[in-house]
Picture (cartoon, rainbow, N blue to C red):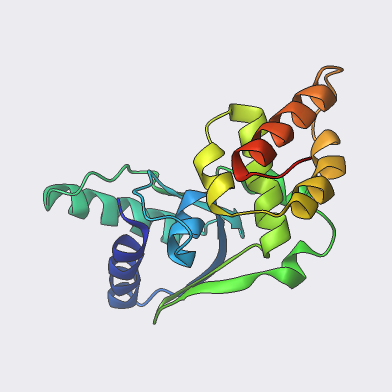
Length: 179
């Protein structure tokens, strides 16, 4: 799914139901709404708040209607999968969010740039699948260096710090930074 057309249609769906929701979205869908990437994504990762039952139900109903119209959309396309990340993000992250979509029934914000970069680099270190998104964010060498201490704290495995450093060095190399 393409993030913007999907969320615009979901906004209309919520409006028709008389529902309103405000949330923080992260991941590829946030990058798509920001115009950082122009690619399809599988879902909208809602960091906060927890989806109320009415919103979760509306999202599943919307997915079913979209599939009937020929759009491939998972039932759980609008989900709280990354919710635990909110517990470990740098202090004050909520104060740094920025609106990326303001509809009539739905308002989505995303993390500030530094926090969003940290979340994508953490995903890259953890899953190894977010390299294009990390590169698309175009971090400076200083941005990458600033992320390392926080990233190292995210896993207790004794091999994790070296893995983080190697991953960041690879991103820096791809961006032409000499870290």
